[in-house]
Amino acid sequence: MWEDMEQRIRTLEEKGVIVVDPRQTYISPEVNPDRIYAGSVLFPGCRLTGERTLVGTSAQIGTEGPAVIQNSVVGAEAEIGSGFLSDSTLLPRAKAGANVHFRGGTLLEEYATTAHCVGLKQSILMYSVTLGSLINFCDVLISGGSSRKEHTEVGSGFIHFNFTPWGKNGDKATPSMVGNVTDGVFLDQKRVFLGGLSGMVGPASVGFGAVTAAGQVIRHPVADSTMHAETGSNIDRSCSFCGVSFSEKRIRRIHEKNAEFLAQLYALKEWYLQVRLQRSEAAGDSELSLVLSGAVETIQSCMKERIKRYNALAAEWSLAPMNEAVLDQKGKALDVAVDWRTQLAYDEWIKGVSKEERGGLHDWIVETAREFKGNL
Image (cartoon, rainbow, N blue to C red; front, side, top):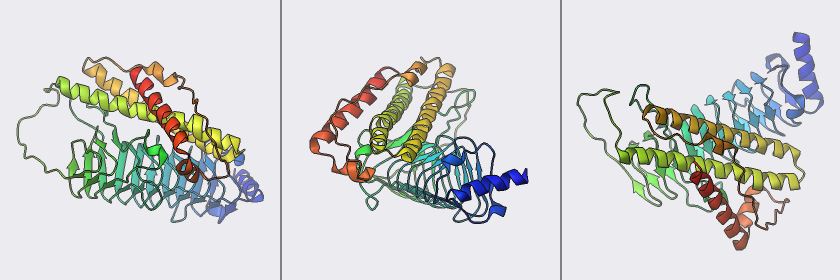
């Protein structure tokens, strides 16, 4: 077995992968060497497992300590400080700090970064979104900002509360959205700042340009370009988990938040399929196409999770379930004439599209989300 391990590592080294210390590196048999690209660096304590695993050109794994990459896609020039990634996708030049814990459904777009001790699951950080340290997000999508300097940021010590205890077993029909997809993909929206040492109770929404004060729990919607702070209420009364009833208003709110979140995920998936993959394929960039396909897989897993969680709530409270068949719905075809300008990096291209192209793309992606939501 050790001889086989040595051969797998030697195969990678021969194709130009830098294995700093082969004695402290593990490559499982199912890892496809063709998905580990030349110029990538595997630091001591690196462990790669799973058929889906991909490490892109000049990516660095384990720059700050041991790192496990399990069935995860790490794009070109991305960096993993240390920690554990499972069934996640990082696009080129994304960066995860030390001691991260990324579980299924995690997606970081270009230049998205996290500091140390960040846990993510079923969460998407769009372009250049930056998270501080000691953060735990499950079931969140975050966008906003227009560049690597003007980016959405979350302060250290932030938690998204994605579970409510009411009913027999409680529920996780609690996705929250900061910004959105249908405007956020164009990289021309105001950045958002969520103050640290805070929490957000899902399902919640925060608009572009909003600032939330540090040291609070966000329980209400935050509008665009708003400074938001809340104070807690003193409550001390008898309670029974099963002895509650949801008002019609609350039911409508939960359904609307979940439907909108799903529609935005669907719009993002179609953006990747019909815009981003079209550009990478036109450029003949097979490596980037594989990474973007990994992102599509991650988005699809998030959509399945959201419908599963909402329908579990619906079953307990005798509500109509969402239509699972929509997951296989074919997206509205992109019928906008666009110059892909494949010589440009993605962010340069999208920020440089003409007014006419942007208008057509925006109308298409908004209609894509609207049609999907209508079929739920």
